[in-house]
Length: 62
Image (cartoon, helix red, strand yellow):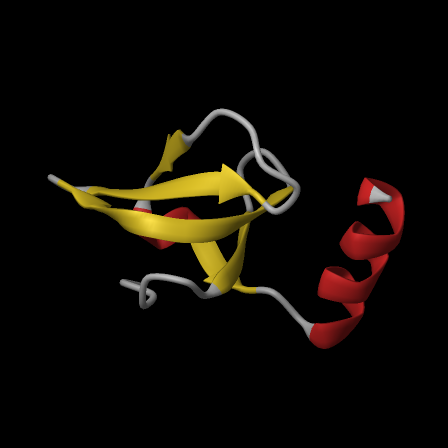
């Protein structure tokens, strides 16, 4: 999956939710929703975050 920049996704290998910041080589570059260090995820390990996952993450980030 090559999600668009700005979309919320789940890295299924780490279980982390992030915002797509870009694509570098074969990887999807993600940043935590509340800010922080970017990490690279394999495109096959990324899926769109559900509204419930986004809401739960937003509650934890506060």
